[in-house]
Image (tube, rainbow, N blue to C red; front, side):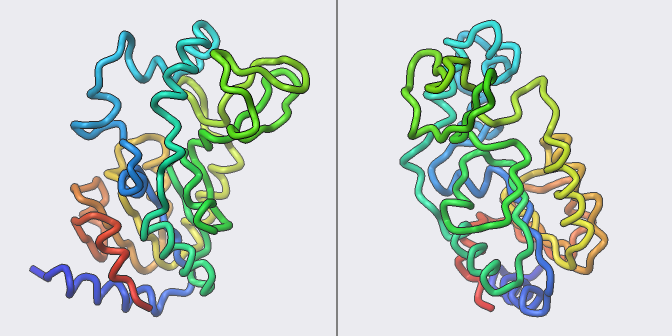
Length: 243
């Protein structure tokens, strides 16, 4: 069995010779910035609420109980103190060097853009963007009043976060671009995700490139197809990237 150092050396060699890299990231990228995930033992799904977290983050809850929806949203979805981590910063470097063509993320925290990455495909949206369900105006969370039920400063309509809620479909344009990027890349890095969230996890099946790399603490459904597997924290691994 290869040591972590040997695997990182192999990773650096692959990245050095790659021409078009895509990074497909999940909750493990955000947890290293202090944002809890959903499914781990300390995640949202294992915390106690008066109703299921999946309901609290559903389209149904937003429509039927907007005040309860927003209380959960402000308490559990917003982490303005979250700091950029080494993974975010290394991906910016790879993009600047012309190596990285896209970041595909299942996270909704906007940290990749905050770090300086430009081509970020947010499969599940962004919790810090909101739009009016009446007039369609877009807002950043910092620009609105945090009322029990936020309303549009322009028309008074209901504001909602620009995220894919339970009961809603993914954005078709984002899905199409995601599949295109995965098909076109020669190296696909799957990082910080166990690939259990569907339909997002199915998109990696479109990869036809040379190098499939998985960096995750736990096993994934794609481990058997990977060219390089590193079962460790993604920040620890990315801190050793040097190309």
